[in-house]
Length: 91
Image (cartoon, rainbow, N blue to C red; front, side):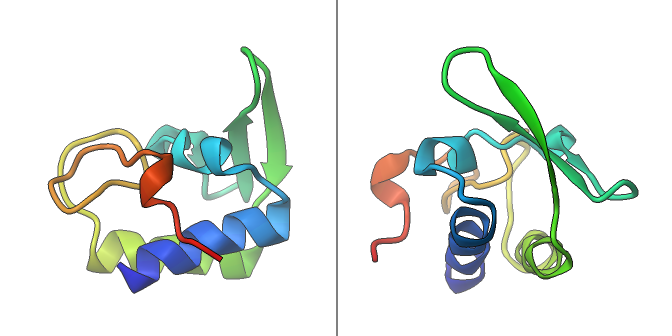
């Protein structure tokens, strides 16, 4: 869980994302070669943002170590299902 929470916190802190935007990220929203993250904002808005190297590395560490299940959402819980806002790291 620590790796997942660290990656989520970095996305919020470094990119200024809202918690709802972080939990809405899908695996296909990350363009690894281009270093770009597509973010689903309020309504149907989508923005492309640069993916900082340290944030990308944190996401990769989470995916390789802990991520389970077949959900297309990046951040999943213990059972492999999309997490909700109540499971977000608390500051």
